[in-house]
Length: 450
Image (cartoon, rainbow, N blue to C red; front, top):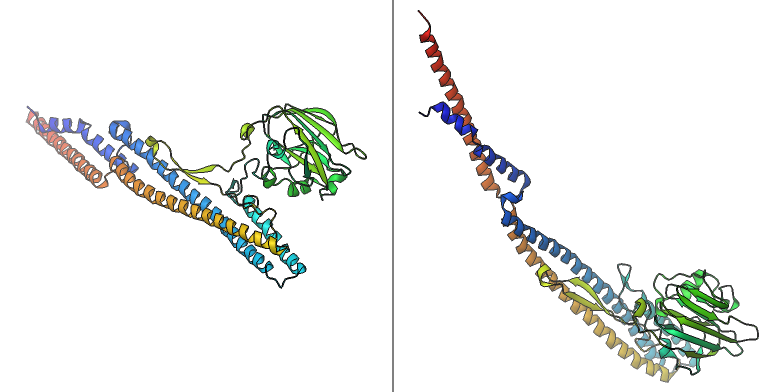
């Protein structure tokens, strides 16, 4: 026969109510319906996948915003370039006015030339995040520096002007290069650098040939020659620790044989290079002209050895979710240096030159306007992708919440129900125990003799 006492003892010894209450407390305190795999194994797997996609879409939002900032900076640089070109156009038209004297045109040309320098400055110094070039091609060697294969006809003398500039680059992977220069009666000296500014062959900075070009220290050569438009990296700095001034030497696996600077009296110099493991930049420093005869066995291809010479696309941001692969929104750089705009030799010193400059400026303005339109379209594309991403993320988070998050109303009701049942169990158990004691007391009293 089941007594009240045995019923309450079996009720209170069952872990059902305490487990239900414990689970409800766990879910209410953590805010999660699934706290361990046993709670919902399938739901845990699904929620983990949704969590991964949620984190990816959060990062995608940041990527898109970075891409929009990148395009805005580029478009800002192009806007300033357009403003400069408009002023240059005014100067060209003013120079065509017949009342201007030669002195007047020279005065106009001074401003015109400074504006040309400003255009180049914008082209090669507009950057995003302090490292990504936007307009000019600031990859290791710029389009302004031609390969020796483009600058010289193999084995044929070529006459060029010397100065503080890059004459040509030697691509990585080239073999058996020979360079012979004759500076005639002037002292023009051959120099070889790496793109990072290491001085491999030539004359030390203490030589007079550098002084004639206002270079007296490493800081001078960094500010005057080590420019991105001259083929150097943005962080290039002078290093003459391995400089070969005469004879033969091997640097980074490349052997150089140099006749040396033989002035006074001898104005010819000869250099041979057995192979190149990295792109090298050739300069002939001085104030005159020189003949150069260049020969080689093979020339490395552009892009070999880490050197790039084209303004390729920048993959700004991944746009697809995990399972569908990764797509990118590409932003192609916009070369707007003087050489890109065909304005290197432009001036307004004469009526004819001003007329030619006017046509060049009109072409440049059209090119810059098209480039600005390109960046505007890309910004709109990224804004649309950002809106779509946010909508998808909102739906994704709602699905994840339904699976993973606690239903506070339901769990609160469960915990309240479990508390009531447990408290009722304790109360009934206490009452049953009291009844048992009363019965035992009565039995004990009747058993005693009177």
